[in-house]
Length: 223
Length: 223
Image 1: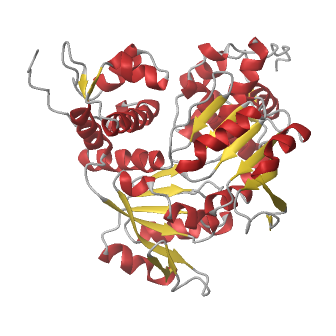
Image 2: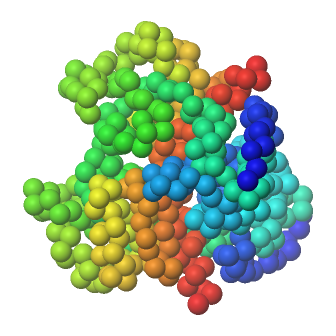
């Protein structure tokens, strides 16, 4: 049994890491978290890959972007790799998040347990609708969007989630940028323009359905 | 100006196409749809890539899995490439979809305009809660889940979206499988077991936040 010291996790050059690799890091992390919850504490690259339909070579290649994590004859130590991936993804800390737009989607996102489990705490919720301002949703009191800039600064909020109608998304994004936010996840079905120093990710829920229809169509064709 | 006939779109071997490529097809499709809406009808691989932060080589390599689409001196004809990608993704038809679970997330998904725009029509909604059965949400009357199997068959529903609590997800998935569904998009924060002939995609909304935190952390480090 080897006790070689694990190499330090080097901060990767984000520009050199393909987006797909970062996406798979999230999948590895989630699978490792399930394993630990089930009482498994070591796993091989092949074992981890098999649970996600990836080859062992894919798993090793993806992780090699960030360091050397396996132990000969053991594989990966799940807790250790979880810690390393969280550090790489930046989720080894708690991120205070602001939610803007408290319609059905905003309410669903406020109630989504998976965020806090991964280190994202929605600490403030905003809307423009006077009938919504003041109500408490999932333990968070909805505030008037007029206070957004002050609240973002006071609560050290770094990330924002936008779930407003398409027509309001750009104005909300501009408010968040003005408040000094670092990243925005946009659920509004519209592309927003942001300065280059603010990260953004647009979530297009139809993409999930397109991926499924691709799978279904292609399996049917090859039957 | 060339008028070479475009090669037929060959049905790809789904197993040989990386998931990331299929995902990018959705992004290309959406960008092309925006272009056409804005009155642009041809675009180069470099132009298309630039709008999405991909290289022109990436765009060409991805599309080469499925055929030859560009025209020398013109680039891609947007309408033609839209048609080809929809055919590849299987969205050149309308897919009737069943939505199960009419909580906040279910309601948000029922109201999400992006689905029908891409060929996915939610034609039936189900819940177990007697206070929800019978109500009309976004023009669709919620039915008792007891009628799911019959309704799926009668309405030729092929895809299901699950937005129920984690504890109920597997039972709902089993019902859908029993009704003969081909694919499931699972929004419940739990992994479900399905027979190999049913496609599934789990949507983990925390992944979007992890991707953003990676971007933010890495940009901050390299400042």
